[in-house]
Image 1: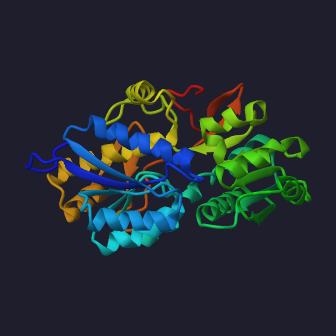
Image 2 (image 1 turned 90 degrees about the vertical axis):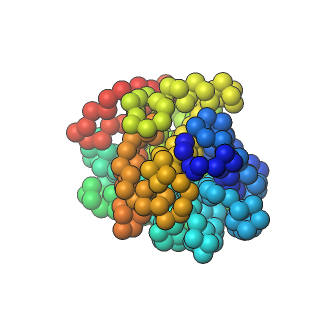
Length: 364
């Protein structure tokens, strides 16, 4: 990565959740970033501050990174709440917020033109699910259980509602709950009162798992939840994960010939070697953000924010994570596509969109 003529390392800063409720995903993101730093073509120094999964702490950390550490590159935190909290601060300092962990649709709006996102917006996560389910089962009724606090789950709900209407569902019911969920059985009894054909759950990881643990009381044709896109979902639930559908930002082997950066095979192998576990999509999207940053720096031939932003706006490429392309007016990520996966026989099976055949796909 060529950043400037100076021999000094580029300083990258990030507020990261390595403790608190989001520590599982935060650690994955942190490790993805560290792998990028270790293999960058130019020396990088990473300043990482734990925000304990707190949006207010993330804001304090970012203020320190901008004013005391004076970082060259500001990477966003994990979680939409924290990303929304720090985006205006980055914009006020004229700094790009390189976003790998805030998927709520409001994130782009909060940071105006100063947020560069590698990941798809949350409203796209399960937007295509109703069409797939209706094609399979002629489903008519859907119920969405979603966390009432924050914006991420609300974005998921909105996407499902839009997708269900487009697919011809007769009824779409949305029920909010307060996380952390303490009484999943009562919530499920309410959700199943009108016998939905499709049940969608969008909460924190622990909320999704708590609900799926009670799936034996369900008489629902199809169950989907956000957590089902991660390997940890099956590790927690075992056989109860079978048949559950989830959204994944990335699965190995689907993008084996990227235009920039290494292929998924190298990334998975190196991640396992360093961290002694398989990477999930949270780690992949954090690592890929670094690859995108490197390409923007190469095109801008330096670290000047205006030039980096112009490079990001004009970039249309592919990485191990899939396609990267921003809408130049809204700065929303429009190139990357969400993949639906279904747990079968203890493995995730990618579900091809209707009328599309996935190439290079196999269970993971």
